[in-house]
Length: 266
Ligand SMILES: [Zn+2]
Image: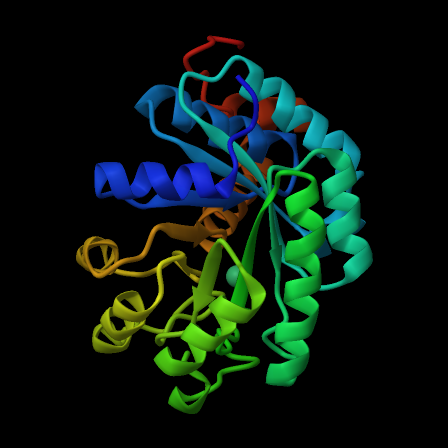
């Protein structure tokens, strides 16, 4: 199987009334876990590679790992650049064979976000790659918490989607990156208003910590893709700390912490 585009997965989410999970990859173990979960459930998945993580590994090598896994996948899977912030970062992803890229111009002034995102869409189209943009500002718990004034405005979303041609739009409706203090309160009315006005896919960043019933409600109200990272980070950190206390070698920590998976590798 070849990597699926974000557009194909959005179409899947509409046909099946479901959301597509995008999970960010720190290292090979993350990629394997994400792939195994998709194989076991038979559900589509998106391998997420944030531009800022590519300082830790070669973007070409990690894309190669994902491509190899997808070759044998039972369900469609995409290789997605998460939070592409620079032109060069997006171009590196396109060259590496990603099937989907996010260009995050949400910290730019509105007209500049439109201009740069439209430029990325034009180039990505030539590669047959889907593009996700961001409008409104999601922020991060504890360090960069914007208020409701940074939530996505439905009328502006219409203008943004029309002028950029994005295939999907990341929106801010009370969701944030990082670990929430308590359960976040999402603005479902705003989500519904955006859904009524734009046709493209809608994306919810900051999925870790959102209540299960709220996941269902966001999908019912029009979200097609949900991003997860922090929940995996917390789980791996907790497991690693305990493993280092209990096992004698790194190999033991790794081997005992690695779910055998459907392939029964270990
Ligand atoms: Zn994000």
